Image 1 (spheres, rainbow, N blue to C red):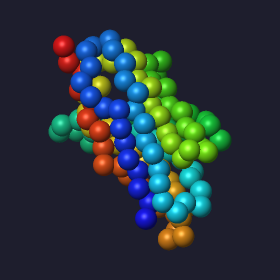
Image 2 (image 1 turned 180 degrees about the horizontal axis):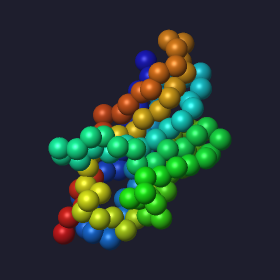
Image 3 (image 1 turned 90 degrees about the horizontal axis):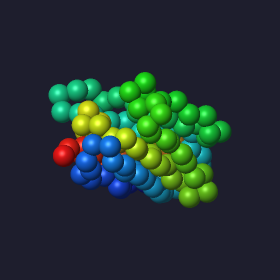
Image 4 (image 1 turned 60 degrees about the horizontal axis):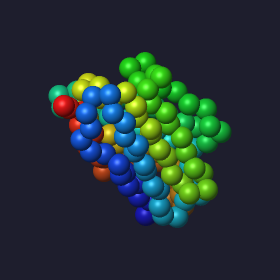
Length: 119
């Protein structure tokens, strides 16, 4: 069974930084695109940042220059370094990944981690 587990969320003041981590476990054949998504109350889930297996990245306009996504293929982990955080970054952050396992290729999700930016 494939599992994604996020960690690193919390409460931070505006202008602060946080680093989110996502660990993938299970019997995995390959991992393609990995990404971080967020969902604020009353809003739809949106892509924050994505990274391909080759290391190409893309970001939402609202986080460009402030957030950095990276992955460690050997450890099957993906990270999101968030800096210059703003109150509007407050949301539940989810890790998502396209994973090929013995059951086929599917998108898997973590349970989410809360990020709150407030003074």
